[in-house]
Length: 287
Length: 157
Image 1: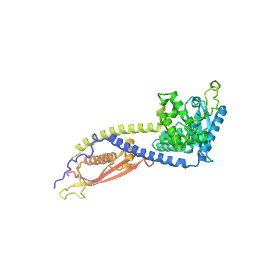
Image 2: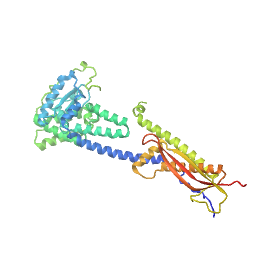
Image 3: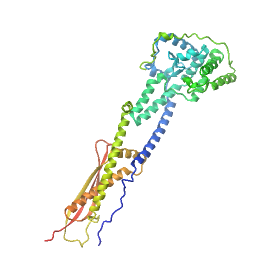
Image 4: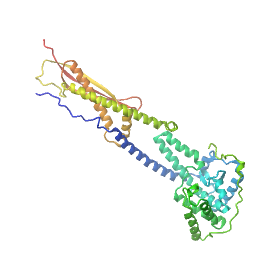
């Protein structure tokens, strides 16, 4: 009987192992799964958030946003115009609007959670009638009515939560930024469809309140003229349809619904505060 | 610096992965070099799974011999393995770990046999033990124990 232990072939060659490659493939898979989960989560949150009762939104924002008392007169005048438009849009009774004036030169206005709408000095300085200002306000009110801020915030918070599964600090900072900055409208970005829907609502409200769409056309013309080449200069246009298309849209809308495209303008009552009066405005607590 | 502090957990993860990878690789290479050299030098110690030696082998004493080795995983292997658990497939990082532990245990057993002047082990068996340090999800270590009956030639009277 022959007794022997023949040499066995190595099962593993440490030189040939590629653990880094394995890690890359696995990480890629995990990230892809995470991305899909985050998108699904954001989508679901976007569906659910607008179904929350509006007072929940208001309560959420109550401690997060405050008007600057120095601009009470301006805020009151904005509120007056907005309330007329809100009546024309037949806003639900629990959907209360709160208008804020900001003394910054940004050419913009935004709506955020809880029916808070902020209009910047830069925008008011450029419009020359109440009608044009009303067109902006109506657009923002329409966002509120269609619950777009809730949708955007719901999505943002969902993505923040999903990211916190990866890294608690990254996720928290995203979620915190959304929670803390809802007042600033930084992450309030709406889709093109949402903007178009808001535009149509706004034109309805303007027509019902003033009897014609002259203000809306004025607004887009003014903004276009002020910066004929680069619309990027105006934040209001970054996510919005281009002004030429919007002017065209105003005409179409007027023709389709038998509304006068032009009419008498209501002069703007709102007085801008003297620039020398105020130092840097601090509209939002903690910002 | 700020970015590092703000994403400290991610940063820490990368450091752990880097340390685990570098030292894990160095240790693995060095261990395999040593395994290959010692396997060559101990190749004349023969191992058999058979329960009894063939009858023609006489004039031997039988001694229980054993060798055991504990090899630890590192953070990198643990991380790759925990990702692998999601998708399934070969646990390559742990296969290598077990291969090292098994071969090291056999080498220690063979060394015992040689020290006693023998060159054959019958009825060789393996046991393995999973050592998870601390809470669940901790870095795994594995023990492999090899034991068998060594035949040691009786000294001539």
